[in-house]
Length: 81
Length: 306
Image (cartoon, rainbow over all chains, first blue to last red; front, side, top):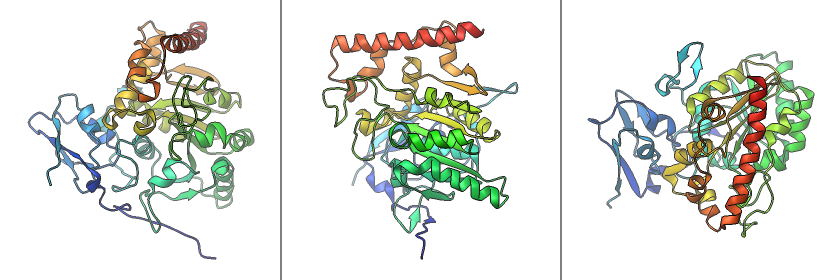
């Protein structure tokens, strides 16, 4: 009998960034690097480099990062298409 | 912030390891994936997840791909703890002592459907961790009432508000005399991380329950997931504690409430959620009364020990 095994893949549900209505924009001058946006991102779409980097391919635009930012450095802007 | 041997743990000190891959199938603003990310950061890659029917079974996305980068066993709704017993027995036979079976189940699969399997596994002393991420309803199947749904809450099966009180699964689990029981919530990632680390280092059955405010189910804006979780603790609707070998200890904000800090009014939490929109003043009065009863009970326990 063959067992159904799934392989771990980034983007298992496709590019989930297309679900987005608002996208977050980080003001790096205000950012204090507390990394609250990184730990609270449900999609792991914020990478930890020298400063937070948002992966717009997979960000679903929930706005949690903007909500938890203690210095209001993340603004939610409507997608323009 | 949780003291850790004199050191203060901060969010930036949490490990960078990521076991939930981008592009999974969760709703935007999902608390379960936040909780699972932090949990797997603490437990590491030598973990076997056992997932019954729940949101997380869907979050993994479609075969032949999965968004979970740890071995995962998907199993029937009522069988998660029984399956974990089987995995634990197999690991024992293979002498793989460093691999840990972890059940990741929702409140429907823990409070209602999986309760007898859970109770059995706890009583047998299976060496595993059982994690219940509690969103107080069956969110995956479209918001039905569960044993964890609080009094007055709207669901599709209690559309005039639930008339019964929720049960306390953590207290039922405590009655099994297991080494570790804890409650946590996503708004305090350091607290959750510390509790997972503590659980990982112990042996025998361990149980952790995580409050996960579900935006579509609780009817609030998806950006407010963390805020809602924080308010639940600050208003006293959710209590943070851990029980190590029968000794109960309150942690974080809940401990501060017991030390005399004022609880925020519960209306603040209720008003932010659409599921409590229909409540009349007398319903809110009843919720307040239940809450006071609960905290008086905790005060008695706390006062008796300190």
